[in-house]
Image (cartoon, rainbow, N blue to C red; front, side, top):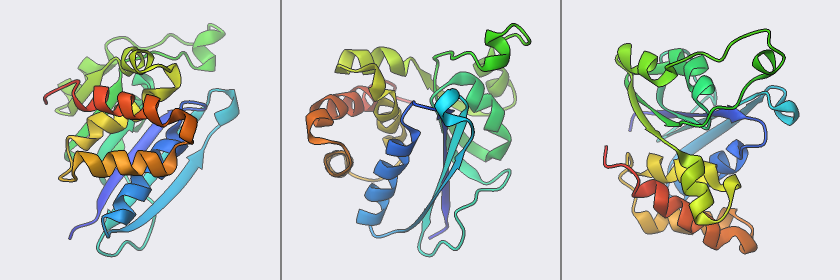
Amino acid sequence: METKNIMIVGVGGQGSLLASKLLGRLLVDEGYDVKVSEVHGMSQRGGSVVTYVRFGEKVYSPVIEDGEADFIVSFEKLEAARYVDKLRKGGTVVVNTQQIDPMPVIIGAAKYPEDIIAQMESKGVHVDSLDALKFANEAGSSKAVNIVLMGVLAKYFDIAYDKWIAAIEKCVKPQFIEINKKAFELGYNSLKG
């Protein structure tokens, strides 16, 4: 089996590490060799956080080079645009439409770019976008955006729904399992593309 590459990108505090842990657990349970690499920015101050998840029959390196990512899962629009060059031709960006202003925008030194999703699509990128924060709130916690996006990503994999749920049950603290299962379900059923 050819190695598959997934990048999880977001802003510190959005739960990208839990998402990568969940994905890693699921893929190991499916029998794949999995490598996960975390690349942190100023995560505690709202900086960019990137996690690489690579899986296949045998994976030798955790690093994803430009043009190699099969999927980019982005918790915020600008983060998706920042890493879109990592996407391979024919790859997919799964993106939360939420806008979180980076520090240069907050202090007035820069302007948040307009029409980010349309710009990516104009370059031929397949974008699966949704307001994941809305679904997370519906599930019971704004912190469940990460799991909503995992639900969207799951549609692109030939792995049974209940195996994703089992991975959630293994990775999430008991008191948050039901919220996260609901968040996953809402993401999974959100889009048909």
